[in-house]
Length: 467
Picture 1: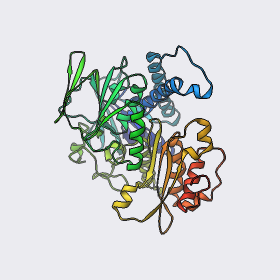
Picture 2 (picture 1 turned 135 degrees about the vertical axis):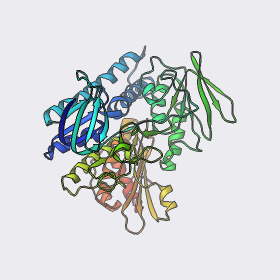
Picture 3 (picture 1 turned 45 degrees about the vertical axis):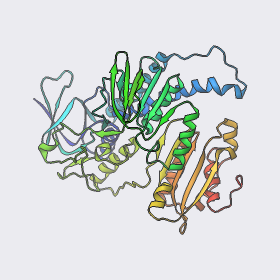
């Protein structure tokens, strides 16, 4: 059995894990990172954020060419798409970014282990499946950081076969465009991938058990999104419970509770994500998980075993790559005695549909439920000059500020480039800014960011370009 010892062993090479490993080396630690996949980067880089955004961008350009180029005086004839080229472009981006982690590890001095890691005891992880290594490689450490990540949630009544019925990973690599695609779940994953295939010609039907899509999102923005996506051709059926889904020859049948069955070509199950903490030996070393598989940690990300830490999706909260990255950094900095912190009240979230949807902080629904008095400022993109030149006038920026202190409590955006615009809001809120602070900051003209400025002015009823 081969053996090596490190100051820190990171179990999991996704956003929390690989970022934590690199930061730990910067802080002077000898670090190893273990991941069971052939490529580091986790779900995000391999089969999540990056490949889905690649397909969203490709299909958005195709959609623009079909419906919007003519508005700019650009005439297109004989337009068609090549699905294989789209997929190849997606894979090239994934290969480049995951390969970049290998380069970073080599440059920074992180030792990579590609294999399945499992605790043998509280000081040792056994790694199996390493190419070229016989038997088990033993990796010992002074400290351990578990970054197990998450996987798509399943339903016992949905018979996934990884082909006709599958999860988000399956939907990233359909070999052809399904004539009819049923999406189970009206959250961001279902809407992003539903948008991809809708743009390429699929009849997309989204089934959501709740009475609205995008649960957790500001309800006003969710309603606007619902109307917009419906105009794009996506069909929504809310308050719809799926009884079962199964393959039927070269198609599928989705049974609806108290409703008529739906026949389709493919089914995408998009009902959230669950942690992948099973079979890692956590029970062997005395690190418990709850009934959903999440690991409990303190503010220093320590588990009940003090030299074993955890971060990212496997500890719960928002299952977002940037949240996981930040936790990985804060965790190892606290190990090094740096007074780093996580502000969970200021974690932006983005949905990469068209229009994009971005938010940070409290929603109006939450403020009303908590009895917090607030003022609201709104700027529609139709009043923004840059949006007019782009032909992107749908959507708005909404700023929510405390009625007494004017401190910004939440910002919610639906519209083009919302994912980029939300960064200003997150920065402002991190530093405790008021809407007045944003309003008094000179914003370049003409830019989409001016909508943030105008919304801040509107909080105090002194908007210039909107009534």
